[in-house]
Length: 266
Image (cartoon, rainbow, N blue to C red; front, side):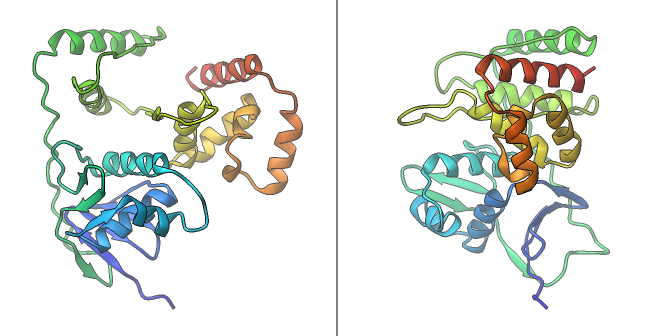
C-alpha cells in the first residue's frame, strides 16, 4: 500500500497519493499536469525551480515549450487565488523560473477534526476603473435577463485588464451559481490555431466537477469539437466521433458550437 503523503500550506492541503488539492473541506480541480507542477514546487518550497527543470520533470516523455508551463501556472494561480504581482504562494523569478513562498508541512493524513483556517483573499485593487466596472455590471444585468452579451476588455499591456476581469468574476460568482470557463491566448510559433483558447476553455469545463454534463452536450451538439480533445473519450468512442465529424469545416465547427451553447444556456 502506498504511504499517504499530504503537503499542507494553509489553508490548502495537497493530497499527493490521490492527486487532490483541498481548501478546507472543498476539493479544487486541477488538471494532471498542473497538479504535478504544483506538487514539484511545493516539494521544493523556498527554492528556485527553473522552467527547464519543470519541463523535464513534468513533461519528461513529451516535447513541449514554455507555453504549456504558462498555462499550468495560470491554472494553479486561479486555484490558489494567487496574484502574480503580489503572490502569496508562487512567485515568478523572471527569465528563470518560480519559487514556492508558503511554508509547507508534511503529514500522513488530512486534517480531520480541526479544519484549516480560511484565510481571506484580498480583493484585487482597482483604482480609477469605476466606468469600466459599471459597464461590465450592465452587461451582467442584461445577461441575467436572458439577453446575450459579448464584452471586450482591451488596452495596452500592463494597465490591469486581467485584474479588472478577475474582480468582476469574483463579484458575480458570489451572486449565483455560474459556469465560468477561460482559455488563454499564447504567442505561437509557426502555424497557429485560432481555436486553441476555446478548446482550452471547453476542456477545463469537461474535466471539472460537472464534466460529464458538458461532455454529453458536446457529444450531442458539437462532436467536431469533442474530437479535438481526445483525452476525454476512450479509443472506441473517439473513433466513432471521428467518423461522425469527418469532413468538418470551419463553418460547421462554428455552427455546432453555437448550437451547443444555445442548448446549454437555454
